[in-house]
Amino acid sequence: MATATDHYEDLLADQYTWMLGGDITSLAEGQASLLKGLGVLPDEDHAEAGGHAIDLGCGPGVQSLALAALGFSPVTAVDTSGKLLAELTRCAGKNSPIRPLNADIRTALPRIAAPGTAAAVLCMGDTLPHLPTPSDVPALLADVRRALAPGGHLVITYRDLSAPLEGTDRFLPVRSDENRLLTCFLEYVDEDTVMVHDLLHTRADGEWTLRTSSYPKLRIPAERLAAQCREAGLEISHDATGARGMRVLHARKP
Image (cartoon, rainbow, N blue to C red; front, top):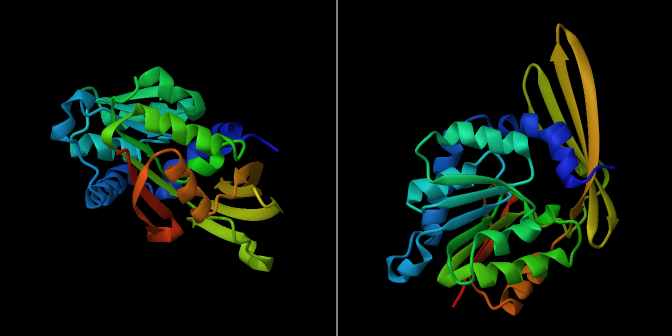
């Protein structure tokens, strides 16, 4: 069993953009539309925030690019994967307001945002369930509240895995083409944890090779996360299941 960080660096980082569909620009445009629809825009009424947005668990930068397109600046993009941060740097280009940072999202916020200075904090793309323990969730939310300026935004997207799948429904096809096939298998450990087993088949010179890796993922019920946001002092304005089964939560600091 690997940690989530090792799992991505050793197996998924090289496949991640392909898993998402391969077109980062198009994906970023879609995420910008989602954020704009939620009202996540630079707030001229709180100029002290300076438009600083933070993307926790940025991956190859889909949400970071969306934030930059919406006018946030700077955009601090945080991830533990050097490979994915390098990909984001290439996509962003030389004059981008995006600032990649290789760091753990559990400790990054106090380092990069003084209290009350961030216009927006994102934790999207199923990043939150990658935290090691359930107690890390309220701790992160407390850091988010401290970092946000008044009126600042928090957006989380994640999969609610609290209701277990059964039998063959636990086998989830992720993506495939003529030379790659990625399948995920879920093994429910306890009420807080599911083991994710990824099976990656790749073909080269007519021969198929199988690589596998497993890591634990948190099961976060939507009702619990909403309650934890409120306990952290955040006001929820949107909480519903969106595209591809991803839960979308939008909250603001009063």
